[in-house]
Image 1 (spheres, rainbow, N blue to C red):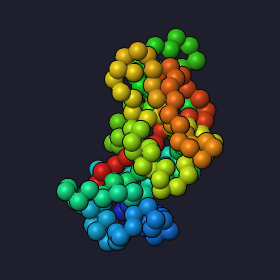
Image 2: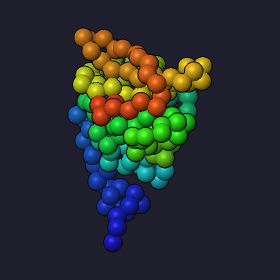
Image 3: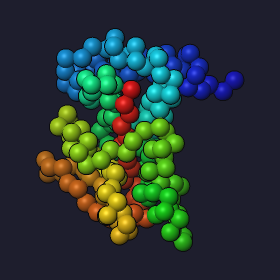
Length: 186
């Protein structure tokens, strides 16, 4: 029998991994307890499915914020480097379609959508970097403003020399060391 996200054993293992990561990284979510987080997760099969996709592709999702107005917890990929299972992708479907040869396996925007998560934007990326040092050897595509995308470009970020850098590249480009990080509101 093939296991999926609705399998109680898979869900239990995922929740255990998330709980352990939450406990080991309290600096990411000071003042928050695990119990309210797990209660929200258990009432949202779609969120568990998305978190399983994040976890399975190497994202190491963890709580990084809490929206008091909506009560939602914000999970983000907290792997040290851009998730290994989400690299070598161009930016979006238009970029993928524009490649005539040597096409990558897919695009960051479509992969994030399929996982049920948001691509980090520059602001969220900088917020994540305040919680630790990420992408010291890799880079991550970030949500790109429409005016930049309309001109054929896309943005990506990384951390080098103790600073966060935002760069641009042709949206159709892809590299083995560039992936994307996602965000999920639960």
